[in-house]
Each structure stands twice: as C-alpha cells, then as structure tokens.
Amino acid sequence: MSIAARHHRTAAKLADAQIQAALLQRLTRILITLATLALAVGGAWVGIVFHEYIDRIIITAVALVVVPYAIYHVVRFFRDTDDE
Image (cartoon, rainbow, N blue to C red; front, side, top):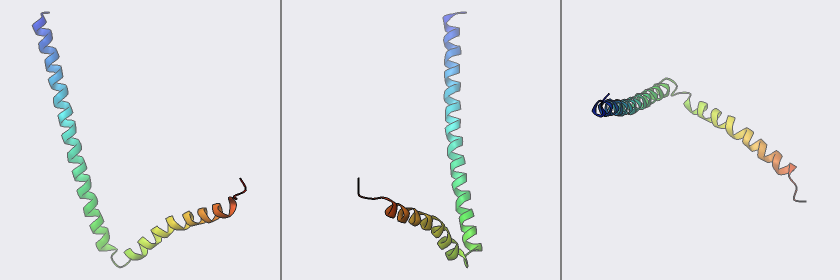
C-alpha cells in the first residue's frame, strides 16, 4: 500500500469523525430545543388545566420541603450544645 493511499484513508476517517461529531452536536441541540419547547407547552397546559388549584399545589409543594427542613434545624438547635 502506498503512502498516498494510507494518507487518503486516514484523511477520510478523520473527515468522517468530524462529520459525525458535527451531526451529533447538531442533533443534541435539536433535541434540547424540542425538549425545552415540550416542557414549555406542558407547563402552559398544566397552568391552564389547574389554574384554580395551582396556588394550593404550590403551597403544598413548598410546605413539603420547608416543614421537614425546619424540623431538622429545630432538633439540631436543641440537640447541639456549646459545651465543646
């Protein structure tokens, strides 16, 4: 096999790899864009369907996070001592 043939095959592999990388990057951008649009449409739909109850849902979700966090800190406050 000649040096020119080896160089051509190596250059072709490199070009294929670059094309595949570019296509993968473009596909990733397209999928992220579609996912963002789908989430925006889904969020709008949820807002429209549950507009009467959305305040209760948000308050419940916040309470589910804040109440255990507050209990943890109250218990930690009374358990920890400054004797150390």
